[in-house]
Length: 123
Image (cartoon, rainbow, N blue to C red):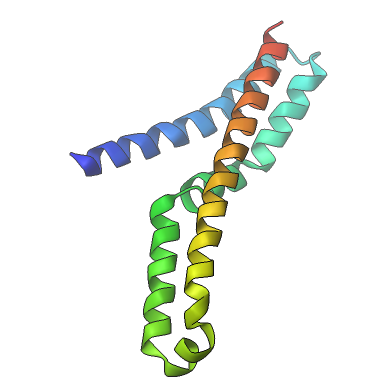
């Protein structure tokens, strides 16, 4: 059940990212005189890959936890790394918490700006 929810959420996210881009492109075909729509479409197409990377890698708590786990295992396996970097694991975990907070704020800002742009285009 959990795997199905993850799959559904991922699919819906991709549909929104790609769907908004194509809807903007289709609207541009029917309303070519709207210059801001052309800029919005160009921006969305150019940064579509970046949005997908951010949502599925950077914003993913599971991916960050996997990197942290791999880092801890690597530190534990090597005496050299443990000696020089072992005390920095606490710092790495705190950095991870700060990144979570920053990404949350960035997500809210991005969503609010997207809604504002959509409202401008509707008016």
